[in-house]
Image 1 (cartoon, rainbow, N blue to C red):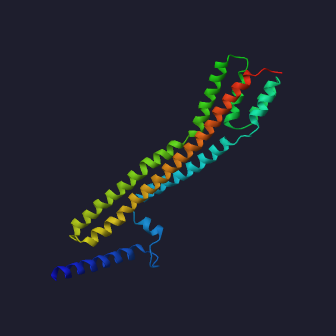
Image 2 (cartoon, one colour):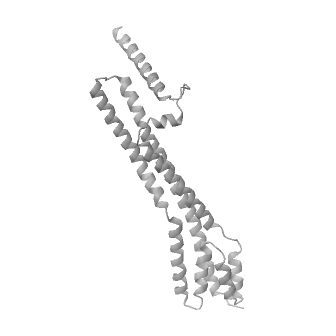
Image 3 (spheres, rainbow, N blue to C red):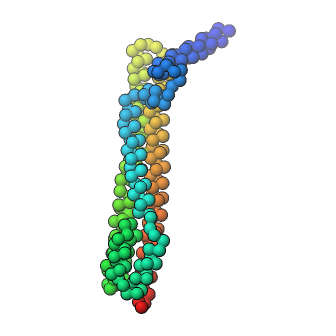
Length: 236
């Protein structure tokens, strides 16, 4: 019976302290904790986490726009190039490729400039341009990989710092109750959860952009192979 009463008293204390913690977090007094109020309980390490999130969003959008632009090409582009080259109108082919702003056109333009040289030299020149275009598309993707690597560690660091503060407070005040410990732990775990979510978003964004780059790379390789075939066709 005594043990049962102790359990009931402990439960009441847990509820009371939890309600007190929620009331303290509920700054606007609306009876619930908003996302902003919850994140504010994570401490000062939430600021670098928010900074990492903003970095990830900015570079994801910037790279996505650039990669989408690079992947847009007229379906008849290679047909027009073939017609010009087969008809012996190399100048028109180069002018058309130069006035088309995408990686495939720049690769083809380099190949047209090398017409008359050995096939292996033409192919090497186009491959070098392709490598440069790949570098331009992959530029700043390292920021996303940095975010998904760092964000969870920053979140975990916030939890460690919070736990150290909690144990220091317990040592200083002598208040060693389950409610006090639980209340302190759940607020400090906010940074870990936030870091994991940010890292997960950055990881998904990084792999999504890599998949889009691979699609553009396939178009570049297919157009290069088609151009090399065109050079083998007899001119009219």
